[in-house]
Amino acid sequence: KLFIDRCREHRGLHTAYRRQRQMCRRERLKAEHVTKTYNAGKKLALEDFSINVPEASIYGLLGPNGAGKTTFIRIINQITQADSGEIFINNEKLNPNHIRQIGYMPEERALYKNMSVGDQILYFGELKGMRKDDALSQAKYWFEQLQIDQWWKKKLSELSKGMAKNIQFVVTVLHRPKLFFLEEPFSGCDPVNANLVKDQILNLKNNGTTII
Image 1 (cartoon, helix red, strand yellow):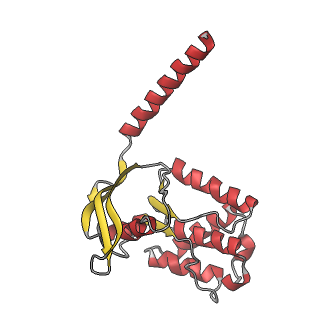
Image 2 (cartoon, helix red, strand yellow; image 1 turned 90 degrees about the vertical axis):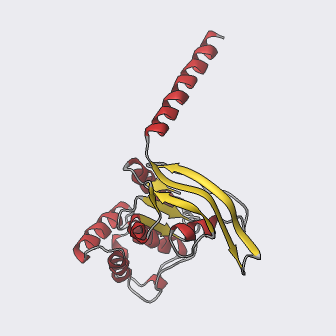
Image 3 (cartoon, helix red, strand yellow; image 1 turned 120 degrees about the vertical axis):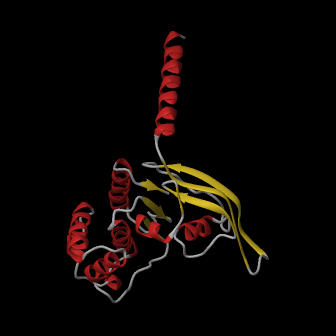
């Protein structure tokens, strides 16, 4: 009984310490009463959605198909606009300058099949405002981390779904985003590649990135 009581006491202190740490962390993302409809208001995609996500954390958005998960991510990425509600990143109201702080890895492949892996990684890096030499340096780092150095000159069409997922991961983190969205990140990955990606997600979190 004494052992159990001490364990409970330790757990309580640990939980209080974790809560205190979470309170001290800055909010990376805050959404307040976000609503989105389609078809002139006839189809409700997202209703009165609010969330607070601190920096350097990993959060999951869970819900059935049609619950509005992808809609919310598209609003954050400014692909579409909310009908109402407010969104803040680093305590600033969402604006076009935030795009360079965001990484978005959709479930489907958003890459060019007939373009070499290396060329499109540099291309997407430049789209995010990176200089070519910076993009090349970051690409080299990530290729080493994921053990995919030999894929640089291959076309995407030559790679399996799991391999292409790794390339898309590199494209998404190349500019070191502060807020990183992943949809089904391990879909199509074998256990070895899934563990490599998982390790890198944890490293990003430990270096201050917020992952959803």
